[in-house]
Length: 465
Image 1 (cartoon, helix red, strand yellow):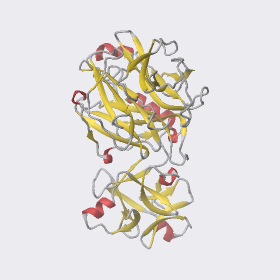
Image 2 (cartoon, rainbow, N blue to C red):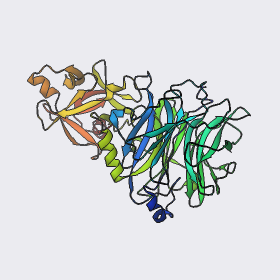
Image 3 (cartoon, one colour):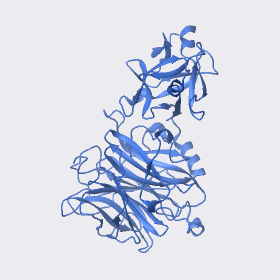
Image 4 (cartoon, rainbow, N blue to C red):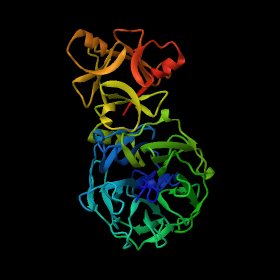
C-alpha cells in the first residue's frame, strides 16, 4: 500500500504511574492512559529507523531519553535494543506503556520494511520491567480478516477492567478504521470490534484518557492529510466524534500526544512522509480547545532517522538506569540556529549545512575531541572518516586527513563559546584566527568575522544528537 492508503501507524503517549502503590496517590492526576505520578521526571521514546537510501534503516526497537520531551538522546548508539524473532522478523510503529503493576508493555506492528501487502493478523509484544531487558516475546492473534494490524497502542479501560488494544485495519467497506480488542494480559484477547470509523480512511490512533473527564483520540485523517482529534465522555467503541482543527506539515501521520510533566502544556508530535522521516511538533495549553501552535524547530531535536515514535514518562532513576544500560552516543550532531532543519555535514570532503534527512547520515556525526593544537579547545573528528578532521584552508572548512603537522592542528582547533545569537547554544572561534568564527555562508562552512546579527546567527549551532 502507499502512503495515501496506509499512513503508517503511530505510537502513543501514556503518562503512567511507576508503581502500583502510587496509584492511590495519583488518582486526581489522570493525564493520558494512566495517572502520572510525582516521581516521573523524564521521558523515553521508542521508534524504528529509516533513511532516504536505507543506510540508516533498521526495523528493531530503538530507544531515546529526554528530560523535557523535546530534545532527545538516542541510546545504544542509535542501534536497536531488541528485534522480533518471528513473524516478518522486523517491526514498525512501536508503542510503550506502563501497566498498572508499574512494569512496561511494548507493542509493535508485525512488518519489516515497506511490504504493504504483508497482512499480519498478529502484533509483536514484549514485557519489560525496566526497558533494559525484554521478556516473554509473543504475537497475539487479533483477528481473522484479510487485512493488517497496524500501529498497535493500548490504554486501560476502567469500566471494563481490561486493557484495550487499538490498531488500524481495513473494514468490510474497504477503508482503514481503528479496531479494538480487550485483554488482561496481552496474550489472550477478545474478539475485535470497530472502535472508530468516521466513514473514511483513518489510521494511527493515539489516546489520552480521562483528561478532565474527557477522552481524546488523535488520528491520521485521509481527508485532511493531517492529524485530527476526536473526543468522547466514554471509552465505548463508536462514541468518539471529530472536533479539532487538522495540523500537518506536508503529509503528516503518526500523532503522539505528550503531556508536559512541568507545565499545563500538551505537545502533539507528527511524523512526515514528505519529506521522509521528519518530526514536527505542535503545542496547546488545552486538549479541549482542539487548536495547536507549531513549536519552533530550534526548541526540539529528535533522534536521527527516527520514525513513528512512542513517548512515555519515566522516573529519574529509570532515566539514569537506561543511560547506564544502553549508553549515550559517542558522537554529536550540530544543528544550525537560523536554519534549524539543517545539520553540519561533510560532502565530497567539504563542510556545509544540509537539510535533514540525507544519506550517508553518518556524514553529520562528529566526535568532539580535545583540540589538536590546544586541549582546552575542540576538534571535529569525522565518524565515518575517522582519520579526517574539519579544518579551515583559505578560510573554507573542509574534511582533511590529519598530517600530524602543527599547521593542520591549529587549523583544526576551535574554542567553544556561548552562542553568539543565543547563549544557550554554541559558537566556535578559530584557534589561529581568533577574530573569526565557524559560520555558514550560502550553506557552506567557513571561518569569518561576525560583525552583524545575521553573521552571528550563521555562527550559532546546537550541539546535540
